[in-house]
Image 1 (cartoon, one colour):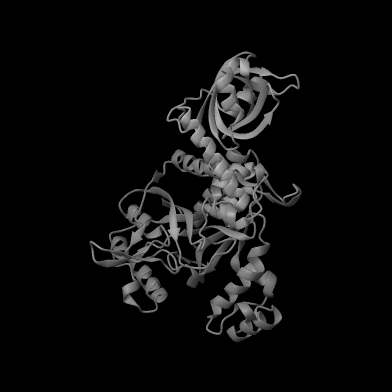
Image 2 (cartoon, rainbow, N blue to C red):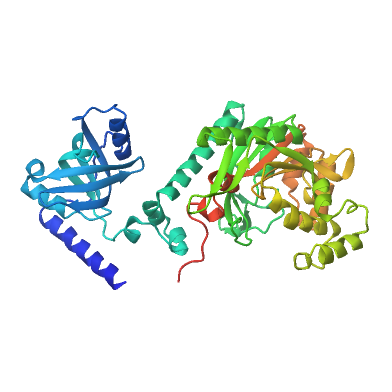
Length: 490
């Protein structure tokens, strides 16, 4: 800490010295005409001739004092380029100021591009301007941050220090852009629906509560997008999607953040099979468009591949068949008491099965603990128990299940999809069962909307964060969320 304070004092002294010279080290305006990395790449490709004049701007990431000449590395989002400075070009005062630049300062440079004797593409500075004086030193001398807490709490330092981290988030942005392109090209309408809701619906989760002073009533941060989007189906918007934040007041883990990004899309006259095709096409489209491949490699910090996901092959299999593979072919033929005994004793799930669990929850624990983690390759798990999804239609050939799929990749659920329930009478009964008789938990406005007539439809949800984890080879959700939720620092 003492060393850091000393460096800060030195930088503040340099700031004062610059101001005494009449220099404003926080300039308002400089217009680069090319990116740092872009200039380097175009010069290497022959698209910029030697001697071409460029204006570049970026952060100073390395400084080499050679006496009569100075070399710095300047970096922006496009990459890095070397800048070469001489007293003859900059003048005595300009060269002296250049020598006293600090790492992490932002500067703008105008000059000509050339290749040094060592073959390095460089910009020979003819003039420069300080755009922002950094009053704190950069993290870990640009070698990256090791402290995970600092990486997440001060993400800007993580982005400065780790190019790989910046690449992940730039690709995340590209993934979201390609998702939008996919749906727009298919005639879907993008909308925004309320984040504050009088009744949190569309999922079973613990909401965050807030209070609206002007209206004098409690609201909840939404836990799902679903019910408002279905209102739009009632209103005649036949293809609709939204990408937005959901909030769930629950635990944190490598797969869960209280604030997360979801895509939901609904298509009139579709069903769960239609939406399976949509999910497969979407993920293929995004992977090919952003990554240029359908084979996703997950690598360890040493660069070794430890997991490969093949998006060219998608399996479709029923929930019951997958459970039978782990729990026995007769699992659904024995009594509920025997299922519980087997789960606790034979399958060693005693710690995961509460005494109050209903029979379907016991089977759900088997699936969640023993089946889902093994589904690394793309798998559509179909026909889930009806108790799990009250907003979907019953399967005509097995009324204990619903026409639902869960798309599992990388050992976790990426996307659920349904044949949506559009019968208002059955929907009311199912929601009442879920609410346990508590009438105040029913979204009467949604049920009234259904009574006005909703077309048959298919719907999907996709966890954007989990999709990015899978596509970008990240094992923690915190590594694909720029500012993950953390306990406030005391």
